[in-house]
Length: 248
Image (cartoon, rainbow, N blue to C red; front, top):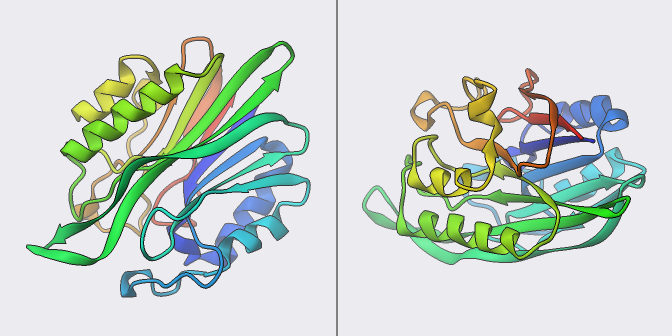
């Protein structure tokens, strides 16, 4: 199977995103997208250029795929979206809250908008076995990807939920975390960190300011998942780079 995960930056580079999706859709089984809008969601100034109907645009660009969309996890309308090829045998799916929406401190002041995080998941049947694919967009704090109580709780809740599901697991997304954090180590305690194993040198594109750091995105797999290849993709269609996993 092949999976691609990407934070879409609200769709600000929509034409580039649609070209990217069109190029890889024939060889991809599952797309996991973060920062997706759908409908008339209000957006803060920092999301100028975002596409309110991004989910519908993706759906048109992915014929032959089943789309799944979460509820919002921020007061300005961000969602997670997953698209699975019709060739994938979907058995179940849904989402859970990780960190409830709350206002965060920006430059010493409380933000006007509340932020939270969710985990979206899909159970896939592969013969007699099951595979759970899950993604998240981790709790955001401005200019910070270090441990916070919310992020520790987030990792613990992710592992608790995945531990309740049978079969192998793939966990991906934009975690908003530096590699050496305890929040990442909690996940590494039970899953392989492919960004570390494959020596990925960064997951942010040239559209991302340097002060945001080089890392934010990860793919973790349980021990029974056998990667055939893993990479940060070169196309710059967001302020993040897409991560691509080919696996058995």
